[in-house]
Image 1 (tube, helix red, strand yellow):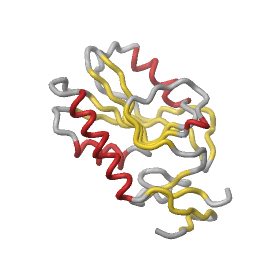
Image 2 (cartoon, one colour):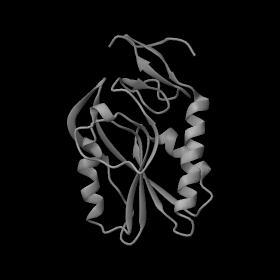
Image 3 (cartoon, rainbow, N blue to C red):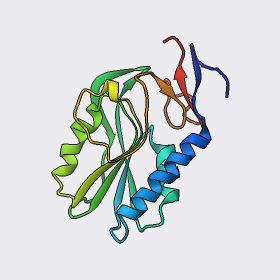
Amino acid sequence: MSIIQVNDKKFAPYLTAAQIDEQVKRLGAEINKDYEGKKPLFIAILNGSFMFASDLFKELTIDAEICFIKLASYKGTKSTGQVITSIGLDATLTDRHVIIIEDIVDTGKTLYEFLPQLANQQPTSLKIVALLHKPEALAHPVTIDYLGFNVPDKFLLGYGLDYDGLARNLKEIYTLVDG
């Protein structure tokens, strides 16, 4: 891995594909153990979580379902501070074990606003699995039940994370250089 350029910004290597894969396998194994016989419903938050959700779902040996919702709060490299719902949830959550799949939790605003909407549907349980968490940036209380990596409060790119829609397809994660 070497420094890459996306549009006007440079990004340095941060996490390798092997490091990510190792954590995805660990998270899958934990969820398999905790949800054996429970048939959870996973809700993947688009767009960023699509690669993580796909890889995580491949690690599951339990019966499980998955659906997708699109929530957004980023434009460029900064959070807009507003959560926008673009594609709504079409699954019934009542009496279901629900696991939210997030690519990254930084301020926590997206989940903080979204979780009460889900809780109103009375799921049996409601948990969060996130690949990345920026503890220094957390501004809203959110509990991550299954976590891949704690990361610094820097802009990250790759493995589903984008910069103005680009570079989601990278197998690794990069960090913004001097940005």
